Amino acid sequence: MIQTFAAPQVKPRQFLPAAFKVTDWDSLMPYFTSLEARPLDTPEALQHWLADVGELEAVVSEDACWRQIKMTCDTANKELEEAFTYFCLEIEPKMKPYGFRLNQKLLACPFIDNLDAGRYFPYLRGVKNAVSLFREENVALQAEAGVLAQQYGMISGAMGITLNDREYTLQQAAKLLHEPDRELRHTVFSKIAERRLQDKDTLDTLFDKLLAIRHQVAVNAGFDNYRDYKFKELGRFDYSVEDCFNFHEAVKLHILPLQARLTNYRRQRLGLEVMKPWDGDAEPIGTQPLHPFTTGEELVNKAIEVFGKLDPYFAGCLEHMRTIGHLDLESRKGKAPGGYNCPLAEQGAPFIFMNAAGTMADVITMMHEGGHAVHSFLAHPLPLTAFKEYPMEIAELASMSMELFTLSHWDVFFPDAAELKRAQLEELERVIGVLPWIATIDKFQHWLYTHPGHSIEARSVAWMDILNEFSNGLTDWSGFEHYRANLWQKQLHLFEVPFYYIEYGIAQLGAIAMWRQFKNNPTAAVANYKNALAAGYTKTLGELYATAGIRFGFEPAYVHELSQFLSAELDQTGIA
Image (cartoon, rainbow, N blue to C red):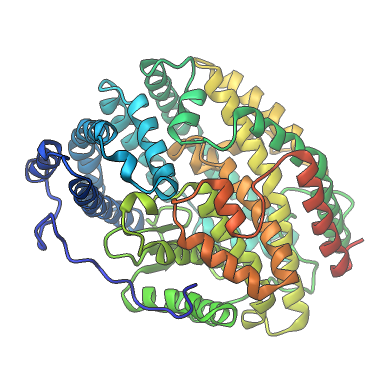
């Protein structure tokens, strides 16, 4: 097991020139042509070819990542947007036919059976899957969808409100929803709702375009709907559509009651008869919102200290990223919403992007994205780029487990014992509360893509039916029904990465199991965590979860078991 941190080593290029940069297709194409023409006539030739394919993939991937990073950091810069769009429309579509033929070449190689069956199984399974799905006519459609999806970030990044002659991004404004002044919260919530609804029609139109393109992609590949196509494209070999429905039911049965318990607890603390949507993050009058940090610099300093208490290797990852400038943490106008950790396949040190505004939620985001970063560092030494392209169900396990592992060290952010308890309870509220929302979004996606050609009105009705199914009914939305009917528009995954959301739910359950393991034996849990992440995607999901010391499962009986653990944790906080 890796014990101490060392900066990732960039392997000297063996195939591309050291100074090569991706500029246009004409300069990139000869390397694809060379790989396609090269004979694979010995086991050694196959290994050399795989290494060169991996090097090319790493260089191209890192270039694409930097284009996206720069664009999301400054959505107002048209040159950055154009650079990203150019890659999506002029480079990526031309690579895909070559990628298809290279995959065919690999599968046809007589020496493929010489590869380590255990280590290469997930990779080769994915290659076979990609070959079966490829259609030349989908290349341009997928490029168009990629560019359209990025418009969501542009639209959302431009959103803001004005309050008392001061401008706020929506992320900055959301911080005010923690204030004890209920009238202020109502005003802020109303302004946020009004601002989002200004772009309702624009986002509906954008989404309809994306739905139409995605459905056509599925039809072209021989599928009745995009849901079934996307399940195969995402490589969901380890669970099925029916398993997702089981997840929905399990959350409804065993998690929703815990969320209702927490909602009632907050209502009682606030002294309210009825909860309104602007009360969900509030504290009673006389209790100030948690203020864990002021600046991005303070956030990263404290995050490094927390990670160091857990494991020195984790702290080293964040320290290195700060040193090389791979952190953009503070919210500002013109910055895309959300947060992410972007792996950089060639150099190994990822990039963390977020919109910190000094809230408790920002601490959680930092722990979460820091977990992703640790995963990137641990998997980087693997010899093939493909081995580092692990599925989201293990990627999100890395990030969500890190949130819960670090809980006992949040005194770095909250030295006051009472505030620490509040912060830890808030994390438990998030862990529990996010699962019904994930079930809502996932079930909505199943409806969206199995009802092609639906109207905006039908979509709204379906959304409300599903939203109500996974709501505890304890919050009164009177006067904001129209906003609630369009809440789905704030979920960027629906626009940018369709069907990528239940992974969060599966991983959240896994993270709860990891936390249970951690509370029993912290040293063993951290060791298992690091070993699982260092394996990248050289094992199946079930094997990766087993390496982490937990099981891969989300059926109702298992979710009930985990909910009992969570209920016991809530009991310890004194919640009635």
